[in-house]
Image (cartoon, helix red, strand yellow):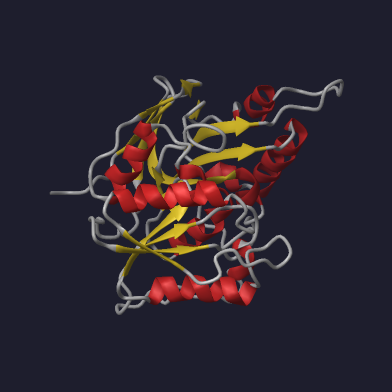
Length: 304
């Protein structure tokens, strides 16, 4: 079990680039508010040309979005990459993709969640830590503590533990791998699927009916992927209710049924995901998951 390489801490004055690797940018006011938060902290933020490009439901063609990512990743002056929004599309640009992770390219921050899960996990596979956290169109809706948590981590300060609901089952230590359940499920049995040995899996989702969550978690069980996981941290599963007057389990019942018999620590109701606080989770760092106390705590911290 080995932690990922952490990019060097950011500092005011650093250059960050904004890309749109997934869906069409529609929330322009929220986008501007997110930009202002970064700029108000003293960062130079460069937006790629035609950030509002459209190709169907995608923010431009695969080639154009792939070129955006490549340009930002290989720019020696760029210290971090901010994703504009989620949606769908990041997996498409990972076909025949290489991160150019040679010595000439220093690891840099990549920040996002939801559909950006595919990029985060792809970076994890080459040993580079990234950040599961708010995209620009959701950043301004975050509570102050969540925004401060983001800047604490990328600027090299320690993170506070997160508190949820422990299901019992003891304590596990492992490497944190956060992501969106739907996106992660569609990465199973692809070259982007990471090795789950020794992993604390952190998952969340939105607008998926209980039977769909059941179907995805059943796929994880049948694939054998969950047999390698040391613990599971559950964030928000928002707007995941069944339609009215349709017989259904609740989302809580589905999660308990599909995950409660694995014999590993599980903590639910942690404050990350859609439609609420989206506490930053570093990808590929060592954490402790305490299912007795309901706590997720980051062990890997920056050294002074």
